[in-house]
Image (tube, rainbow, N blue to C red):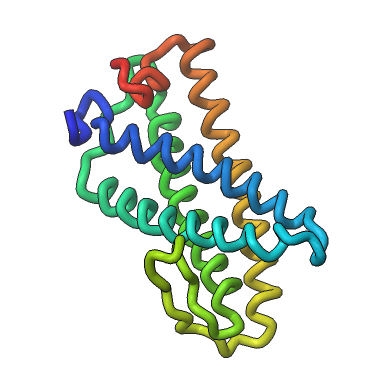
Length: 181
């Protein structure tokens, strides 16, 4: 089934969930690696192109996911899940969406601070629209890092909660997000 139902998540939601999860882990790791490079390392100048390109595509997927979530019902809690756990899962989902929107927005502000647009895999360019903020690249870089770290920590909590539901509570919560209701 494509769309969510009262009982389960649809395949679009499942694919978006895992695509975003893997991209967040990959982009965070990629970003940390880039921070470790010396200015004179040739990768210091070439790798940001890929990080930015993936980031722009990720932003489009994230916006689609938010739209998809707003136009689909959230399934009822799996049998045995406490009401507060169900509501906490919804809050965490929306908190991660908000934090991810901030992360990609800060990435945009870092990348366009000098007035240059963002080239996306040489397919198209996203123009620079906000360039006049004092020390834009510096403060946006700090926020980009700290909000990305916050997303990763919240996602870790989210993942541990899924494992707790699967192995301790033995309910269907995790199975629903891997398409096995």
